[in-house]
Image (cartoon, rainbow, N blue to C red; front, side):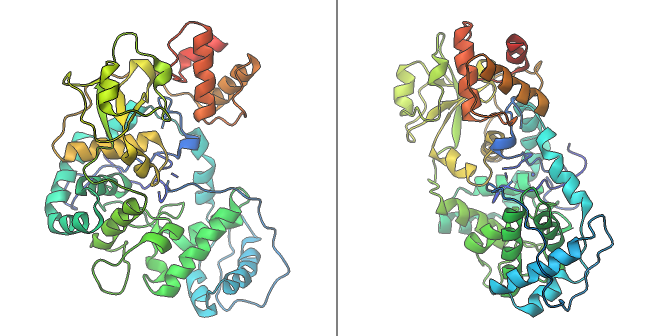
Length: 450
């Protein structure tokens, strides 16, 4: 994972934070892959591991062909209807304020990209345990490169921290996970990728919205069309903004009149990330979470994101920091068990939910938070993980949902996604068989259900 790089699409802003879940500070430094997880909906945390969530909608069939676009489109692909769809889309784009000249320059020479669709189709099969993900997300190499990046850009990051009130280590950690500190920002033509995904049936409405937003970015002159590069799913730049998020939150901190998140200078990208987190309520100085020890006899059913208490109140129940002392009262917190009763436990604060706005996978949030802690000089996670476990496959997750529902523990759907409803169904099943109700959707639980 640390030898070759690729940016995994969206967060969201980010997923969809993807997905998996997206470091070098300079070309001379060692390179490692950016491990971007899938969004929460596609994640099994150790269970398994893009920018903000994507809506689904039915594909819009090509309409009557409008006036011929001036741009030429490469239709030599496995989707002969793509060129006709693009001409049809031109009318819709122009109706939303895109000029004909900008549209024609943007689509000049693009073609349907089957590799993008292949990547999109394979997401649901991607599974990775939380510990394997964190081994990469907060590896020694990524931590070392993060410290170098922080030192190299300390003046800019101090300015960003002062302006937006977001801890510079957190901004640096997002940069590290999303693009390995700018080393792997993605080389896909964003217009081509988004056009391919908008033409495709699976999530056409969402990606057409992103494509229109990308065209508005081009209209504003922030970047030339072919320099608008990113992931296969349209996440862009040092910190992998999707186009709609760029339009709303990107900032021009350099003052050159452009919100440049693509170039060698990461200033605008880092400032845009801080502006995004600030907009969603980041509390400066509050931890994302703190690793804790749970007491004997802990009520695992109380490990629920909705069950919040001050750390001092948790301490009265025996939940203490790894040093055996109560965690400071940074705010109300809940207990998070990303790998169930056999793995590490955390008290997570409001800032955890703020990072979730960037990518909704718990693994991603823990990865960002823990990497930020390590960059700031903190210790590795001290608790053990159930490393003998493996992540469930997509088919196994669906099987678990079917079995739970069949036994009276309704998951409210069979979609292969381990979300709150499935976790609650697992808890209820665990209670019924006398196990600790930690909600951990493990292979052992699946075998017990069988």
